[in-house]
Image 1 (tube, rainbow, N blue to C red):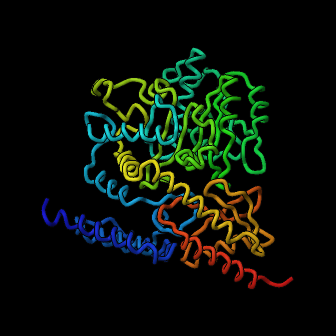
Image 2 (tube, rainbow, N blue to C red):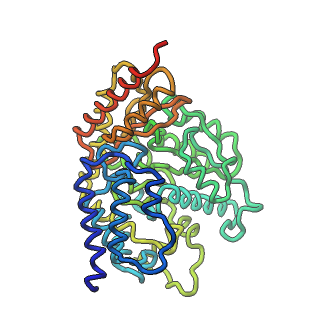
Image 3 (cartoon, rainbow, N blue to C red):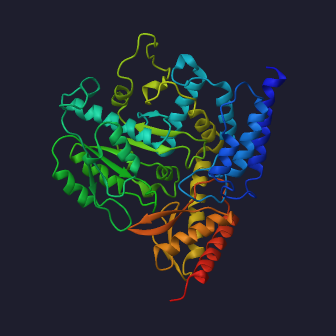
Length: 469
């Protein structure tokens, strides 16, 4: 590699390390809008080659003004966006530099073996069946799709239908049952697989957002034919956890497949203190979670686990093309477990994070984030004009301000404009609310305290500005 070739790499490293080092002091929000950013990124396609370092410099300037430090900012609490551990960032840099296709063993034996080890570590850490198969798709949407595809294969095969060959036309109807507050990615997976969202039966939930077992039984008793039941560990708003053990027991009595949406909440299984919250989760048939949330590895990386490896493999790689080597025991081919063929080695940062943290490190990360949310709760409980809408179960807290939706939305806007911290809005039981979500390893008690002070200041300013009645 020439000096000219390595110059953009050196500049990118410099920009990245300076960015990470300055996160604690930079505004938690964009300072440039779309018009300004378009001037920086846009214009006509260049007529000829330019300097690579100029391009890298431009990216750095644009992101400095128009980026939001969602992944690494210690006071970003919007959505459920994890940080990135330094070891995972470094590994991801190597993944890009190596640029090895991680779909077949014979394309990169090292990546394949590391992925196999990471898969076994995930099973061990979360207490899932040791015989289960594991894949590393882009995120929970594809993990749901993979799981429901495996369920579709197994349920229809048991009914005498080859769905991979014949499709769904003329096949027995497969019903999907989920809690009324299931995440939209379940709907997306149902659409992508040809089930359609009208096939989803919503089971009533309690006032905390948890599926009601008696209602699930009533729903299943009224259905004929194959059924997939989708349970949820960690409601995206309240953090609520379905009684997954009961769900499994009821669903299996009816011969249903149980899929668990554990996008962030399933990581609670890694904590001895929180594990009782997900008791019975190991009895499900499939599980979906994101590594780019609570494990704090770079985007994008989901994890799918399926207790029926043959159904998993059949749904993903029904037949091998002639140019592909035959599968060999002991040599992992990732294309057997995820929808995509050409894919980056997104599992390597997972392996690196797990090796670096170990069992106790993952547990500490999860428990620390939960403690931070309880600290937020302590700061806000009893404050005039503040209503806490949920019990803290994991890492999510819902807050409402004032007497109407307008006050809540205005307070959120004031907080975002402060640049000190960032929270997003949501709707809970028909009312506007602010969501506090902590999944970042960088967040400290001081970050919580500073952010809570900004919340109180924004509320006070909004109430003072409100016209008197």
